[in-house]
Image (cartoon, rainbow, N blue to C red):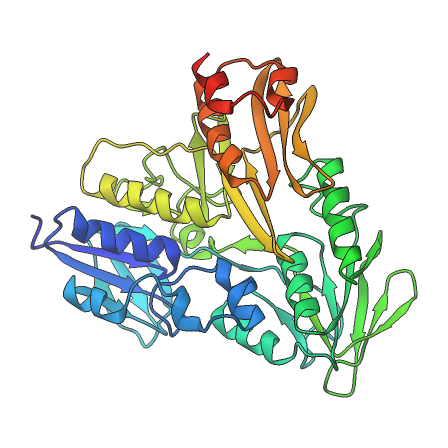
Length: 408
């Protein structure tokens, strides 16, 4: 099948790896070239801020497959290589060193990079971001009972770093310019629950403040806040978001708008170029709007769909977004991306840290957040996709099974 064709994939992370594997699984017999700028095979990133940062696992555990899988499936892997230019009309790539690659179809799965802080001293030794395997290992080396860690940003990455720091005995200080943790992702009550969890575990959280500058004699020693306060610290971890890697696509003339603009099959504005993962802005029929998702599940499933579409299959991608985090032994999961809701329903016991919070609009579930309750959240996805309306009192009643409400 298409044995004389070359399908190239730029980016060898979660999305790129699954795209390459799917091409082979679906019977593509041509050349599959997977190009990554990191010196590692395809891997997933969630463990980097969890098990690997904690020291509970080594980097090999986040590899998608054993190295033999790529060889057995005849996927040509090029690591530590940068693509410097895409020429869509000529169907070529330019690599570092001047090498040209001719392709028939191309996928851009370059993901994103940790957003950096434009502050003086941000280049000092001891100031980190967390996005790569090397980042995780370098931060882990500095997490011990003798270390004070300053974490800039109270989003998911920042809070997971704080959790790991405390478990490894380090002092953790989190600063956030908003007025609550995970402001963009969580409703106020859930933000408060997460805030309290961190405070109970010894984390200091300061709101309404950001970094003015970092100071130190070659190595970080302190940070000066915008309010004039000074925080002495040994390391700092910047967790203020992700910047999608769209520069190659933009230079190639592809349509970009908060990511690379794709259709429901992952196809860009050029018919032979596709994109998937953190850098792809796609239409989601289930949500009724365009979104760009930064999640493990989206990177995998969107890439699988786009790879099948590259082979000419009639397939579209639309899923209810799902996110998760582990902090201090608490499992936190989110379903959906609710923008507005008129009713909040709690099912379970907040004090025992085992509950689901539903967000309803006109009786329909727009989203949910769960603490240590993955079972109910699995049904939530099905309930959201059903487009049914639900009664708040029945959702809150643990004596009424969710599957019964789904069937009713």
